[in-house]
Image (cartoon, rainbow, N blue to C red):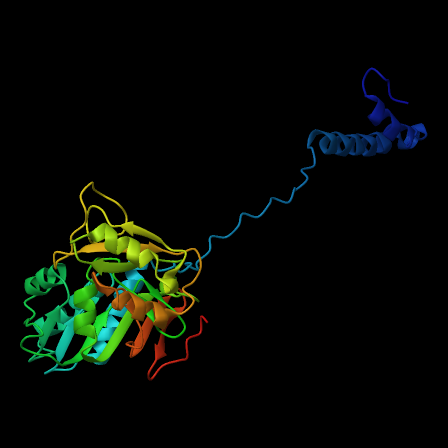
Length: 317
C-alpha cells in the first residue's frame, strides 16, 4: 500500500481498496490509482456550496391608503353642496355664521364671480359674515329690505334626531334666528360630530340676555323647571366662543350678554325649554332652533348624507 507519509488517511483508504496488481499490469494500475487520487484531492479541495434560501423581502405596496378627510374638509363638502343644490339665480339668500357656514359663503362668492349665479342678494347673520361676503363682492341687504328669503344656509352645534338644533356657539344666535326663521328653506350643514341623540350634554345652550341686571336674569334662567340641573355660566372674553378667553364680559353684535347653560343629561323637553326661555323677562333669545330645519346635510368619513325633506329619516336616533 502507498506510504502514510505521502497520503493522508482519507486517501490511504481509497488506495487500500485497489491493491497493486502483478508486475506485468502494475504500470496501468498505477496510472488508474493516480487518476483516482487526483479526483479525490480535487473533490476535497473544492468545497461544496450549499445554497441557503434567502428570505424574501416584502414587496412595496402599490396601493395608496385613502386618508380620512379632516374636519375642515368635511365642512367644505357640505358648505359647497348646500349652495350647489339650493341656490339659484334671482334668490334672496341667508348667510349663516361660523366655521362651516364660512364655506357656504365662499362657494356663493365663487359662483357669483364666475357668472354662474346672477341677481343674488344675501342677508348676513353677523358682522364677521358681512365682512367675508363684502370681500367676495356678494350683494347684501337686510331684513328691512327683504323680509322673506328663498333659502338660508347655516351650521349647527348639535342636531338631534328630530332635527332640532343648538346654535349660538359663535355668539350670533339672535341674528341667525331672525334671518333663518324667515327662510322658505333653512338648510343646515354639519359634519357627523354634531349629531346627537339628545340636546344638551354635547354642547352648552347659549341664551342671549340684556346687560341690565344680568346676574338676576342668569339666576332666573337657571331656576326654570325645563332646564333644571343645568349650570348657568356667563360668557367671558370673545362672544364668538364659549371658552373663556378674557376677563371682560363677552358682548354680542347686538350689545347683549350670553349665558351658556351646561347640561349633564339631555334636555327632557326641548319644546318646553324653548318656550320657558323665550318667555323669561330679560332673555332676548336662545339657541334652541326647533321645527325650523328643512334639511340637514351631513358629511362623514363615508361621504355625504342628507336628512329631512327630500332626504333620509335621521339615522342617528
